[in-house]
Every structure is written in structure tokens, then in C-alpha cells.
Length: 458
Image (cartoon, rainbow, N blue to C red; front, side, top):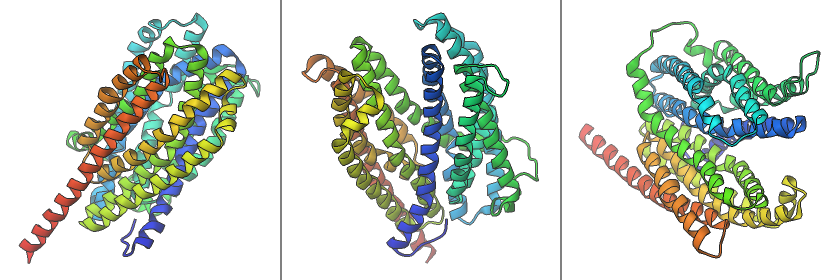
């Protein structure tokens, strides 16, 4: 990151940060996609087991990873405030915290995994695959969380191409490990869906190894000498990160877990309806990578400018990011409307499922439009380290407004299962409006505070 004078320069720099983040997110999404598809080729039970395992793991991973994301605004503000001498300690403590969080997740999983799976009405083989998929994957949780902490450091310096580079290497490695372990190549036993979990774990180790090499040998990261000095863990430093990270993590958890809740409510409908809903949600999740990436880029850009006390520049980045997200959302919405049939055919060959998927995709247009407003605003607020409001609005948007209103629309109106989509869209829209109000208020207060501070200095 570096200071810019004109809106055009800001646009160029923002895109330089954004595009690698977007490619990275799409690459990570593709890993989960290939895990599911390749497991399906091994058998229906393997597909079901991996799907169950993923549905349990993804909300936990995204929620805990949200805690680690706090390192990005912390480092970005230190860079912007020209306090680079404090960065090595912040990163080391972030890595320590990532290891502790990984160990806690493994311990909780050890005691709760079997009871959770036993509450589900699963065939014994599916339950076995789901359990051992997660057990195999758990051997890579420590390197995964460590890598994500290091990634936050890379990204906060504006070097988002590095994480893109690591992801583009890791994706084919993951596919190769899947091929070898799921289907039993090179003399190894065919592990089926369990092999997908082990492949993911090995990929996490590879990603960590590459990131450590870059951290220690590639400039500008090696200049911080994070790898050369040991310092004891600091509970105070952890608390500083947790105060920012816990609200981020819970906000993301509320957002991710709501889809599992909606799927549970929709289980009262036909299998075709559930399949069509899952297909539309899957495609909407794919499109969500765009506003999510813009949100992450905004956290870096806004955090950098706030750290330097350039509040007007931070404001310009905020609305630049929101504008890009809305424009991209309109383009994506038009593409969904025009190409709904080819998209639906990607997920099924059943005519009834295709028709219902196209019906749900129409609502996905408005769903991703609401996301285009809400996600970037959250990213901008995180750049200001204002995270508690995003936690509150995530809970209210999805669980207080979205799910209850969706149930009412689905049960008591002509909308039927599509009512859940209308409920989520309503919740997202209300949340986006509230967050925008918060952002405007925060920016106004920041300008007033800076002006008073300058007047006092003069």
C-alpha cells in the first residue's frame, strides 16, 4: 500500500489489491468444489459423507478464520501510521493465536464429533466416511490456521499477489492429492471420501511451507525478520486481536450457518426442491466471492488510510469499493437472467430440478445485489476497526429478520419454498441500510475528530 492523490490512482491501486484476492477466493472455492465432485466419482456414500463433513466443517472454519482476519486491519493501520517496528510482534502473536485456536478446535471436535453425527439420521457407512473425512482433515488444521494468519500479513502490506500465487500452486496440488488418495493410485489404497480429507490436510501443509519460505526469503516480508526472533506469547496482544476478531468471526459464522438452517427448514419439501435450492445457493455462493473479495480489499485500503489519519482518502476508498461491487452485481444479475438455463443444467439433468433451479436463480439476482451493498460496507467498517456493529447486524439480518420472515413467506403465502429466499433478501437489505448508516456516521465523526485535533495542534 502507498498514498494516492487522485481517484483514478486509487482505482488502479484498489484493483491491484482486489484482483489477486478474487482469484485467491475463487481458487479456495474450487478446492471445495473438486473435493465434492471427485468424492462423488468414488461413490454415492463418499459424496454424502464428504458433503456432511463439509457442512459441519465450513461454518467452524470460516468463523474461526474470521478471528484471524483481525490481523489485516491491525497491520494495515500500523503500516499507514508508519509504526512498522510494531508489525513483527503483531504477526508473531497472530501466528501463536492461530495455533492455539487450531488446538482448541481439534479438542472440541474430539469430544463432540461422534455425538453430533449420532444425532443425524445417517447410514452407517456415510457416518463413517463423514467422521474419518474430518479426522483426516484435522491433521491439517494447525498449518491451515497458521497459513491464514501469515496470509493476513501478506495482504495487509498490499501484496495480495503472493496469496494468489500460493493458491494457484495449491489448487493443482490438491487435485493431485485427491486423485491419488481417493482413487488409490501409485500403489496407495483407495480411501474414497476419507482421502479427500487427507488430501486437504496435505495441501494445507504445502501452503504453509510455501508461505514460510516467502516470509523468510522474499522482500519486503523478510525485512520484518519475523522468523528470526522468538518472543513469548502475550495474552494482552491476543486480547487486542480477539476484541476485533471475535465479532468478525461470529458475524461470518451467523452468515454461513444461516444457509444450513434454511436447508433444514426446506427438508419438509420434495427432494427435487431441496436439490434445486442447493444448486441455486451454490451458484450464489460462487458469485459471493466478488463482494467478499472487495470487502477484504477494502479492509486493507481503508485500514491503511485510517492508520495514516487520511480520513478523506479512507472515505473515497469506501465508496469506490461499494460502487465496484454494485456494478459487478448488476452485470452478474444480467448474466443470471440471460443464462439461467445453462447454469441450471450444470447442476442436474432432471427437468423438474432444472425448472426449479431457474426459479430460485431469479431470486438469486436480488440476493447477490443485496450482498453487493452489505459485504463491502462490512469490509470498510473493519478497516476502521468498527466490528461490533457488523456482528450485531449479521445476527439481526439473518436470524431475527431473514429466517423468521422467510418461514412466514414460505408457509403462509403463495411463494412456497422461494419465501425463504425473499426472507433472506429482506434481511440482507435491512442490514445493508443499517451498516451504510453506521459507515456514514462513523466517517462524519472521524472527520470531526481529526479537524478538532488539527485545530488544537495549530
